[in-house]
Amino acid sequence: MNSTVRNGLILLGTIVLLGVFAFVNVKPAETMDVGTFVTRVQEGKVKEITVHGDRLDVRLADDAKVEVKKEPGESLSEVLKNYGVDPEKARTLKVTIKEPNGVGYWAAIILPPLLSFALMIGLMLFFFRQVQGQNNRAMSFGQSTARETAPTDNKNKVTFADVAGVREAKNELLEVVEFLKHPEKFAKLGAKIPKGVLLMGSPGTGKTLLARAVAGEAEVPFFHMSGSEFVEMFVGVGASRVRDLFERAKKSAPCIVFIDEIDAVGRQRGSGLGGSHDEREQTLNQILVEMDGFEPNLGVIVVAATNRPDVLDPALLRPGRFDRRVVLDPPDIRDREEILNIHAKNKPLAKDVNIKRLAERTPGFSGADLANLMNEAAILAARRDKEQVTMVELLESIEKVMLGPERKSHLMNEAERKVTAYHEAGHALVTHLLPHTDPVQKVSIISRGRAAGYTIKLPTEDRTMKTSTEYREEIAIMLGGYAAEKIIFGDITTGASNDMKNATGLARSMVTQWGMSETLGPRMYGQHEDMIFLGREIHENRDYSESRAEKIDTEMDTLIRTGLETATKLITQHRDAMDRIANYLMTHETIERDEFADVVGMPPANPKNKSA
Image (cartoon, rainbow, N blue to C red):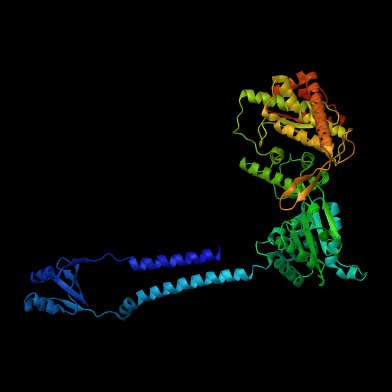
């Protein structure tokens, strides 16, 4: 609990207790005026009188107790005499006089002001501590907020055994581990320890995990800080935190300093938008000085991570600062299988779970995606009250990670279901009939995410390049749903909007970036420039004329029109097959790969897609 909140609760409790002491009273006894009391004495109905200063506690003949207030300084005998009570009658009364108790007397006098004084002192101490806390925070504003993981912290320790895949990256980083564990081995030959390692890769490929694994393997302290944590609204704070971070690191050397998302402070300088007191640039300058200044950082290795190395300042990337650049590629099928096995260790899997098949069904998934897949499957199994995670939950989780959760509340009417069935049948049939496509894995008209239905096709092997022919067929597949709606219903719906967007983007990339236009030739059109503070690719340096722009539009139109003609031709020639797919979807909602070829009634055009 925050100390400020805790102190506030203590103060509130004290005020409540004081209020209770001040206002809670014992239920008072029944009171009686002096005249009535005298009358009861004369009638002989008073059994006992106890005198407490100006208060008389009277016990009547029927054992009832009443309280009588007399005038201050007047004795009981004077009261009775003044009211004309017979002296003989007064002498028969049982009277007890009690002097005030010492403790109670002084407590009654001293306690009220003492409690008030204590409350005042408590309030003063509370506000004093608040001001003192603000001063302490102000004094520590320029200190580093890096989290340190000690090598003896076995709970959070990570080694290379916990990082699946990225074999080349781990081999490159083994050299850094050797530098940290046995520096004398390299010093004998005059080799200098590397000062920086830059981990580059797509989001979710394991950059942070790999940095922690290096520290775990070398058994050295690990300082972790995000690039955005350096920068504050006050000038000089970021640079101060950099200095403090490296001071802490030098005291713990050999160690690793990990700066995550370094592009937050390491962007290229000289934009002119930040002025002479740009806090980000000052922070970057201090990092540059600390990494390669006059004072050597013996045993301190800076590991940084980014998924945008293209925007980093050249001074960061020169030799002497980040000497090593390690690229983390998306995992291939073997890496995905290893990653899935690691995330499956603490999950009870059923016997029908095939990790290799899951790896085949997840091309393009990053390590984070695969971890999310296993977690979603475990959650789904728990919601179904199962004791083990089965293959059914794992396959459903793949679709959830790719497309989003099922929208069971989104109920389509019969007309919408029919349009969606033919739309997805168009995608699937064109995919099945083209010779350079990937096999259809699943077709469904169950809504997921924003999609009313979906067709999943996955490659049989990992590839990093595609040909122009494959991309042309890809455009035809994207427009297969559009063509099916046009042929069957004579009209189109908004369901094809995303397909057209993707087809247009692919056609533009083919023409302007990949040189896949015979008319325009092997040239890139338009250089996207990163505008600092304004975001990625918000400005395009148009390095071509208006006549070229018209030719680009013409080539894009040709690619899209050719793809649509291809899809229309295939669907028209195999109308009966599309009807079978659509009718099956209307009845069963989903077609898996194993039964798709039987529903179509013909083998796939691509021979590689025949094996299940």
